[in-house]
Image 1 (cartoon, helix red, strand yellow):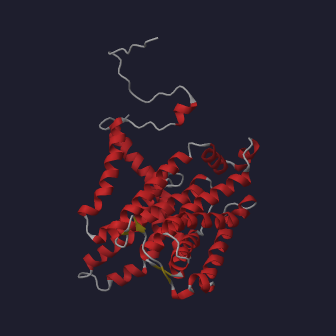
Image 2 (image 1 turned 180 degrees about the vertical axis):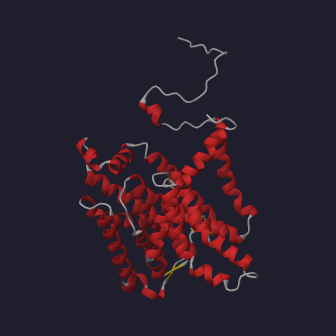
Image 3 (image 1 turned 90 degrees about the horizontal axis):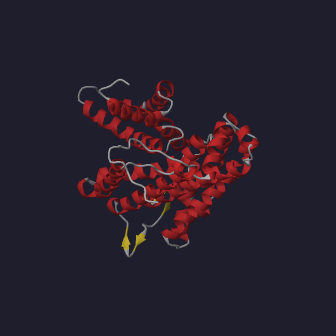
Length: 356
């Protein structure tokens, strides 16, 4: 039967009639155009930016992938981890060893690095079946210490403190040996991982993660296998971080153990806290914020160095304290992070100038 549409009725909103429609993406035409425009602008960025800005964008892109992985584990599944720096090192050294010492292609080493890191993350995720909260955090801290010790001592694979030099990736005969060429690889990978993360939480696995986070006992009662899904969360999260580590290694082209210390783990934890736990976009906001914060502080120090003596040394010495204060302020005033602040701003202008 042909259904006629009343021309005098204006649709205002998104309406669903079944569960499949409710779980689908509901982008308005304007929202779709906005997303497409942002992606196009990101791909055009190297054409209008200098090398320094492109290098910052590369660091942000790698941080986004790692932050997405940590948010899957901590924000969506409720499993605290402070070992992301070590898992980043596992991915970096796996890819570096395969390309520099085994002579394999980067395009083989990249997924293998993610899989190896997923396996290592799953092993250290086994205590999550019986541990939670602070105790699980201590277990992941042990992973940080063990892996960091291994990276230093296993010199046959990692070259220890001397570092490991890795080659640049080659695509269709073109070496990605500069910031601008490598940018497109990082950007494309970050976009793909972001899309996958959005879709992950529309699946049975993603909904199980959220149920475990909200109340693991109730999740087990309704039939969710806690051990299986916790292991999946650790594996998927570690896969993300392993890929980020592989990209990091071949971007810098020289890696050493001091690049993967606990301070890196704290930075990634700060990304998901400041960006917003349990928010895909929050992972991106947090990665941008934490990556660019030292740059902003350095620019402020440079601008005020003529007025305040030794301001650069003071700010560099207080950088970690500034990170800590920033996290505390977000936890006190906006626990949902930058993602919630951005939603509040959008909602305000949707209703403006009305107050209701």
